[in-house]
Length: 198
Image (tube, rainbow, N blue to C red; front, side, top):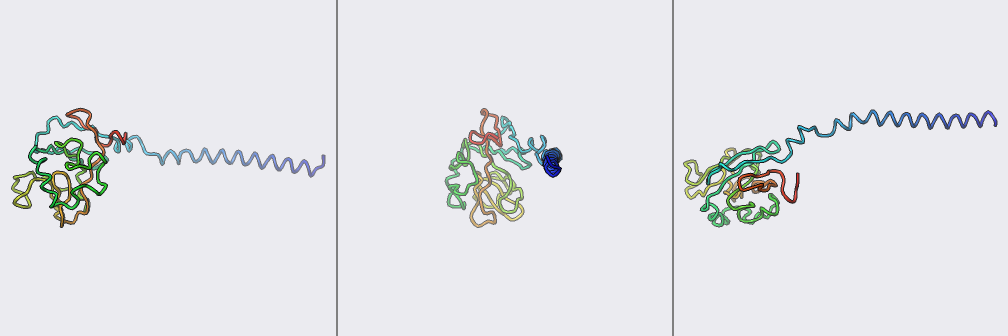
């Protein structure tokens, strides 16, 4: 074997060894950075489903729960207010909920799984303000024949008791219905449903 052959073999060995050691070092150095980019347990918990106890909610009342840093409203509608929703079709912009602001199971007149309960994210679809809940008969009603719903104090957007936006207001779409399911007659799981487990 000539000195040149030994030199080439040695060069190949050193190149391969350097590549292996360098690659291993790069992987080991990258591990902390990749794990840093993963969401923490606290972050995952904030975005996870939230259980809501609605056992004390009386007809006409609203409860507020927090999910993903947003207020989620659960309104227990009266039988009368459920029946009056059809009368609102001519006043609202998207009466059939054609815009995808709700899961498929809430694409109905009441925009809910059960007619008695409305579950919506309490953020106006105009600029992100939080509308006020104004039940029927309230002295704060924005119009004489108010059937109950939500009024945004910032720019006057109005929503009925199905979270549908009125015509002629700044908000472009209905209130968002989050994924949810009933665990029992008195407990909801907000942020998860049969189609979306998490």
